[in-house]
Length: 93
Image 1 (spheres, helix red, strand yellow):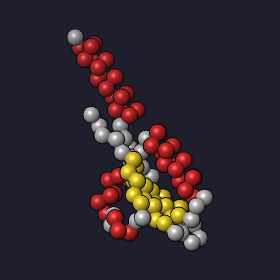
Image 2 (image 1 turned 135 degrees about the vertical axis):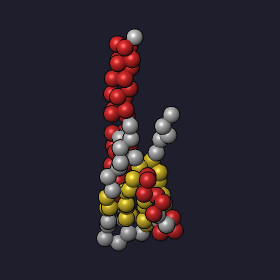
Image 3 (image 1 turned 180 degrees about the horizontal axis):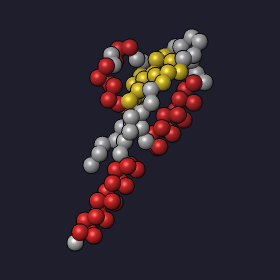
Image 4 (image 1 turned 180 degrees about the vertical axis):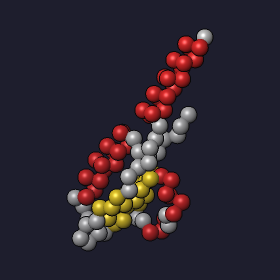
């Protein structure tokens, strides 16, 4: 019985380490004369990081100012400062 409990604990630990959302790295992309201000709030994960980077690469070619923050930092955001806000988040079950 202890062996089964130990295996379950190891499996759960591996799952949490692999899939638990981490904090997203904040950064800004500024263009010379931005016409729009875009805020992207995300969680850190391989998929969300790839999605955010792909989106930023596409938007960087236009005249937009982009800020990426972690979802937990949304409490400090004044939504009137942004033309668009994109939230990339998933709920834990």
